[in-house]
Amino acid sequence: MIHQGGRKTGRTMLAAFLGATALTCGALGAAKAGDAVQDYKPVSDERLANPEPENWLQYRGNYAGWGYSPLDKITPENVGRLVPAWTLSTGVMDGHQSPPIVNNGIMFISTPQAQVLAVDARDGTVLWRYQKDLPPELFQLHPTNRGVGLYGDKVYVATTDACVVALEAKTGKVAWTKCVAKWKDGYYMTLSPLVAKGKVVVGVSGGEFGIRGFITALDAETGDEKWKTFTVAGPDDPGFKTWKGDAWKTGGAPVWIQGTYDPKAELAYFGTGNGGPWMPDTRPGDNLYSTSALALDINTGAIKGYHQYHYNDAWDWDEVSAPVLIDITRNGKKIPAAIHAGRDGYLWTLERTKDGPINFVDAKPFVEQDVFSGLDPKTGRPTYHMDKVPNTGKKVSFCPSLWGGKDWPPEAYNPGTGLFYIPANTNLCADIQGVAVKNRKPGELYIGVPVEEILSSLRFKDGLDVSKPVRIGQLQAWDPNTGKQVWTHDFMDSATWGPVLTTGSGLVFAGGTSDRKFRAFDGKTGKVLWEMRLNSGTIGVPSSFAVDGVQYVAVQSGWGVDADRMLGGINSHLPEERRVRMAPQGGVVWVFKVMDQAVEKATGGKRADAAGTKASAR
Image 1 (cartoon, rainbow, N blue to C red):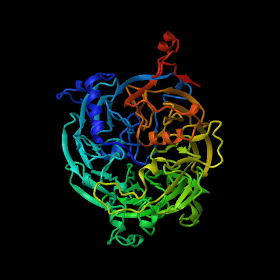
Image 2: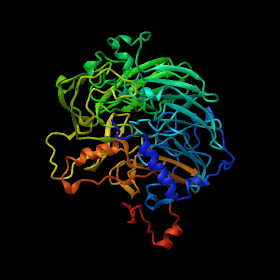
Image 3: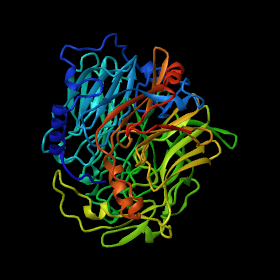
Image 4: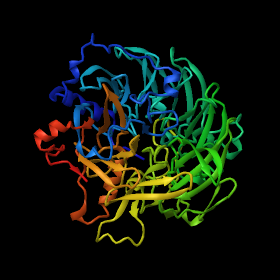
């Protein structure tokens, strides 16, 4: 998707904000050069593979991508007493999407504009702050960041000028910087680094600029490149024949999200984006390894296996989320599964193997999907209704929309409830037509669809009655052992862009709706048990941690990027009286804990949300 505006505006707004506004727990400038983290606990391979319950050491809490915390002191019975423990303004505008990463009581926060904060997780005191000096002319399609990686005594962040920066965890000082591609050629990065076996593994974005995607591993200590694997097959790769002519040179297949990892098999799993330009007639063939799940040898980067969710993508259905690694039992057979809720609207169950090949198990739609006419029962390869495939000069309508049944926000899995939770969007479709592409110029958009058409393509499914509230966003729960849906919670007149967190007590936390509310659900039934309206819309990845025996839930609020663009499209189709006003901008870290019963008794249980109204528990 396309972001209007550039880096310079963001820098100007940031400077103004920092010059005039104090943070909730002190101004950012309060972290002096001599400040440092005390008693830092180095992060090892063993700790990443077996994280302690009180810590949240990486993007989804564990290598398997579960988004699960085993902590269970916040329960369905007491979650109604959840209150803010502390908050911290980040001083940055636009979409805040990264999780609060916590190691031994120290929280690391990354934000748009390549900023990293080290914070005392007990009270929000800023210990140090780092911000990279990005080129002022850098044009960002997605000016966001999705989290830091930890390893040894360092903190790693990938930046929108296509660099990886290693920071000393105690001081925030730069240990090394490695730029993996040229930002002037259209490359950038938004993902949280995957760190394993002494390697910092990242992938590049920029498919809309006509780049050739790749994943690369850097030495965690020095930043030296250990290996580099292209996600678009070239002349020396087995999948090269799936591209025609020179289309592979600008084939896209970007990587937006951190991979998952199986430490026993030493295999990393990544999802890849769509081919470029968008219209499939400009790049005939299956276009490996776009819109795929890849299994890579962590030691060499060799592609050991893949599954292409749909070939020759025409709908901008990037399958960017890495598959979640879950062991399931299907029809009496134990399966080491890789499960993915696709942007193409299908829930994919794949089988991973110790040597790398990825096998198809099954797939079924979890939202309205009218493009696939069927799937091959052995391979999962779809066949298409050709009247739903856009091309240059051919306009078609299709469902789900360009943003898909689930975009980048990650799913979650709870081993206690046995359920898989999906932040989904249904009843949204798109109308799109390609135009002839001109010769590619480095750093310029190379899409083949007019930008104004992209931003106006969203529509509701035919036949929906908009005179009453329309079901759009959903939080869905599925049983991966049976392949059946267990429950759904609908959001009317609002999409959901809420990454999901689930905990040892069976709770599910998610934001993502345009009403700015962050919610706790009963993971077994989908009932809303608690909700609170925050300062802005919440599209950040939640996490949970414990310090001094107290469990906390943390999330960044800060609306923007594609969630904001989709909201504009939805509003254009709703009656004036039901349109949701755009959420206020500005990033804030929110950290919640259960109110002490003595305090609750003294205050009468009253607590205010960010708008000054009483938060509600149900």
